[in-house]
Amino acid sequence: MRVVVDEPLGCPGPLNGIATGLKAASGDASVVVPCDAPSVRSEVLALLLRHLDEATLSVPVWPDGLIEPMLFGARTPDGSLVANALCMLGCRKTVDFIRAAPSVKFVSVATEFMAVDPSLGSFVNVNYPFELRVSPPRRSLEGSLHRSFRVQQPANSEAIERLLDFAQQVRLSLSNHQDLLLDLLDGDEISRSRFWSALLSRHTASLGTLGEEAERELLSASAEAYERERKNYSDLGLSMLEAHALLDEALVWRMLGEKELGQKRRLRAQRILASLGLTRPKLAMYR
Image (cartoon, rainbow, N blue to C red; front, top):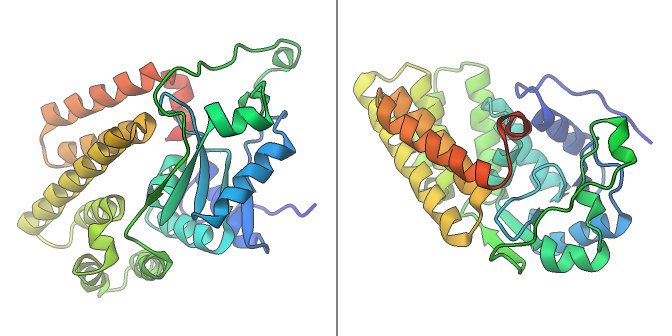
């Protein structure tokens, strides 16, 4: 077994580990597994790898729209590009990796994973020794998502490479990074990708180098893109991703000075996460 130490990539937490691991991996496909899930079955990992024939990532999804952001499959080269670009831009949430990927196959827990792991023990987190002796209650399978499906982003791996180059320019504080951003947002696949256009617009506005009017325009465009992303996930039934799009939109509204609007978005996101059983302590691992 090869052990690698996290590189200082600018995104402390699990996303940094994912980026480091994918960068060091030599195979075409990888699986990301949480350190607190001792009962993950090999059949579950094999299923995740099999679905990578169709997408950049393969991610378990529960019927109520909860996804597993720390147990998934990834095409190594494309996944490494995405993770490193996110880290360069200062992102920290593991769910952002899933929102940012060129394509994602959401694999049904209720049908496909049940078939290979009837107890669904692969999805049980163990944080204390006593939990190894007690069978935890299985998560409910109520909800409308009982099928697997694929979501395609307009941003392909070539566009992600350009993003990574841009992110490196920003990290190095080179003077032409604003021009590079405008290049990316004008007529590129990135401009049609809700997540990436929102993130890049927000990030560039936060640099404070364009002037107040231009920065407000970028922030307004960012809020609109996050709202379109939220609606898309709502239509798909991906409640957890919808909530995180709302949290990012709330941040942008606060940056615009619209505190009340930002608070409304945040409370709406918290209600969705609470409905998924993600209380505030549990929420930290997804942020």
